[in-house]
Length: 282
Image 1: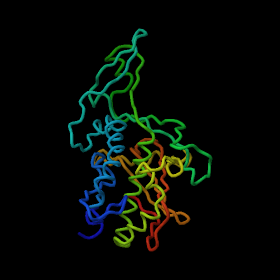
Image 2: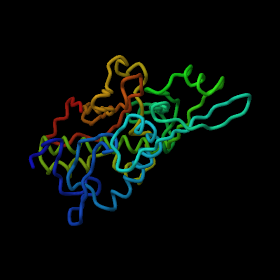
Image 3: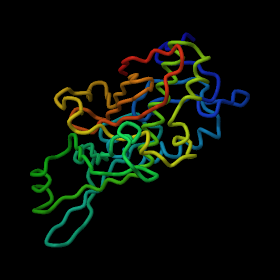
């Protein structure tokens, strides 16, 4: 199959560790459960797939669980049909269950610092959470919820592990960089890209220095919030842009861009010889 045909690229070796003499599975650059259609064929060994699927499942079934169900994204399992909403009436808290249409798509998107590689700020292992951006698309508005359930204070429960989310963004950025390397220069560039990647150790859990390579673009640098990236008719909720800057590959990633959301940045690694990244938007 030709490189890039129908958003599929044949690799034939593990993009993470380089082995080729073992059974290999396909790698979704953007998960199937986010309606991702970009697939690297025969690109992940069982050992590396176990590592990456662990944090990816935590993101899909934890952080994005309710948003995926409310937006009716693809799933290999049945979406939950009840969502918990914490309400407080007469000084007492209780949890009630709403339908997806009542609840809407709820996300608490973390704000990180810009990757330390770019501004050289001092940091500790892991990644620093500096704030949150609350996003809710659809669902009943607050007035209608109060009309149905009485005068109350409402609270949505959203949980996630910032480190898992940062690794997830790094994995997507790296996978798309591999696809572009294959498309532009052939399979020989995959090994070079892997050798020049900065994010592979954090993706594989061998290095905890996430903040060096993953972060958020400051608010003033975010794309125009009026420029919608979420299209209900196509369920497009993921946008990634690859750029080359001063010899390194940078990725900008947004989730659900219909409303103002953080733009995540990943410093993927150095640009391999013969691979022209320039600016590519998926």
